[in-house]
Image (tube, rainbow, N blue to C red; front, side, top):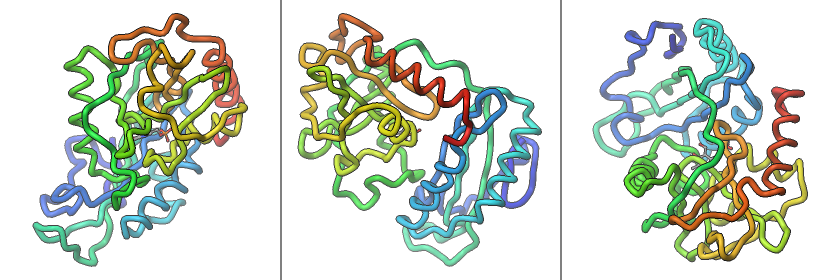
Length: 274
Ligand SMILES: Cc1ncc(COP(=O)(O)O)c(C=O)c1O
């Protein structure tokens, strides 16, 4: 089942127009929310970020109570305990170019089952850069073509996630994840000015444990330079990085990663709206 513009419909009827500007030029924003033990996790924070992405791209986001009730309906109809809830809002129907009509936005809420994330991930640094000064930096838009290409590159190189540096050769983020490293015993993650998405899992980690936001050279992701590294995302949670460009960490998961993962699991078990 999916919710499309006010109606709960079966998957084969979950359709949008061929003129939808989200389809035509990627003129849309979205959120991916974890469904865990039948509970959408941090939905309030996700709706806040959806509103910020919409305001950055100039798309009016439907009221939070409409989205909340669509999420509840879709989850109930699915019967899933664990899954990935996708909330997409596009600019609605538009012309076949970049200009926009003042159309009613399209709202789609869908859910798919999700298996547990792997115990660790191998990553590769891709040759392309995130543009931390681009118009879409920090917005979660449906223009994800660069991520599609980068993730395919990672898979072609036997890795699970692709890591971007930005135009200043600083560590930025993964295609669907933020990155933390442990350097000289301190937990460090790139600041949002690196061009990364302000991840919700990243924010929860920063609130839970002692960590600093600091620019890191992309070379500092190498296992010879840092003791540990992990990815964060709503779906992965806290996922240790086992190897970077084929070089493995000696200890994976290391003690800091284990501590963060345990604190995060405890937080979500106690509270679905952390
Ligand atoms: C580009 C990018 N960075 C980071 C993240 C992690 O964000 P969150 O923790 O909010 O899921 C995502 C999530 O999909 C993402 O797409």
